[in-house]
Image (cartoon, rainbow, N blue to C red; front, side, top):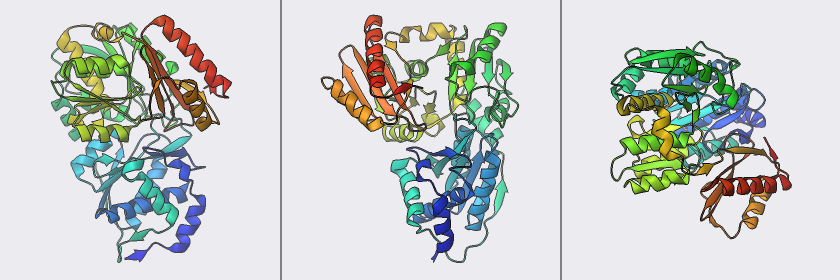
Amino acid sequence: MVKYNDMDVNLKKKAFRPNVFRPYDIRGLWPEELDHNSIELIAAAFVDYLHRHDKGERILVGRDLRSSSDEIAEVVINELRNLGADVIDAGEVTTPLFTFAANLSEADGGLMVTASHDSIRYNGFKIYEEGRALSESTGLEEIKNIIESGNIVFKSEMRRGALEKKDFREDYAKFIISKINIPRPLKAVFDAGGGAVGVVLPVVLRNLKIWHYELGFLPDPALALRAPNPLMLSAQLDARKEILKNHADAGFIFDPDGDRVLVLDENGDAVRPDAILWLFASNFGRFGDAIVSDIRSSEFLFEDIENRGLRAIPSRVGHSFIKETMRENNAVFAGELSGHFYFRDFFYSESAIFAALTVLELIALKNKTLSELVRPFFQYFHSGEVNFISNLKEYTLSAVEEKYKDGSKNYLDGITIRYPNWWFNLRPSGTEDLLRLVMEAKSKSLFDEKREEIIGFLVSKGARLA
């Protein structure tokens, strides 16, 4: 074994920002936080990590369409090859397609260059060991420690690794179509927002009974067509107009790397993601199946799933945590309030395209509108996510815990406090410098009262609405 050049490591470490390591991915400002030195260090430490786990011969690399992703991928590929790893370059892909490729290719690991729904100022990595995304508890922390220790070790007599470029889109399309049954023609609006879905979805749609209307399918590396986050109201305007204009059955708004989707019904109204998860579970779940949801979903979701003889399992927020919980429980579906939907049939991973087509399958099979299908779900009054800017996050969480000390508490992710007829969760974001609040009550009057009370209390502690 030989050590990576000590001088190089020490120089590179000076430019390294450990804060780019988040709980379930790597993300930072480009190029202020993720410069070439830091990217090379991350790639080098990843190869070392894989070698320590008796892997690292073949690594998959993919990227979203944002303007900095090509340059970052080029740096990564060059560094991986310099360190002796053979690289499979999947090109411009969605994160779900990357997950599919990681499993199909049986690569030892993978680096997906993306900052998901974050603005154009950011970029980062989702990191995989074989076909599984890593989190802070399953490898990311170890990779960060390798960088910070400077003890990067590689095999002796390293050769320059080979490079293979491979297009996985046709295989991905065949796989998705094999899982979907849409028995009658439907109309749908798909808004790719200039992101990677526009590169992938046309291949999937070729053989399906869907009259579709395309928005933002041409690449937009600047992400300037609309807000990258589909949950923002401004991101939904064009799709809503297109649905109403063409009398479409549903609409789907994707984020730049295609792992999140917001569903709009036939009226152009956004359908909350936990309602979509409930729709999947209540129609395709079987007795004893496990359904995983992040802790922010409506209490009705957990109650109704249990009443149907299914198992409702809460999880921390974040794709890698959800996937780990799914695998541990062999869960058939999972979802997050952010618009991530996960499927056991898709390697316990998320696929926004798979989710969109599953919604259309249900509309076709049930012969009902989407608004009719989800109407029974909305029993309680839910805030959705309310974001706060705060420089005193730990202090604020402690103050909230003290104020509501008579409620039952759970610390799975941030703090969740429950009372008989209402509850709330407050947690630091894993991807942005924010505190996120979600609350729900069983009556409108109680909801209005408690929402005003909590927001007022947070503001009194120095937080302000984002």
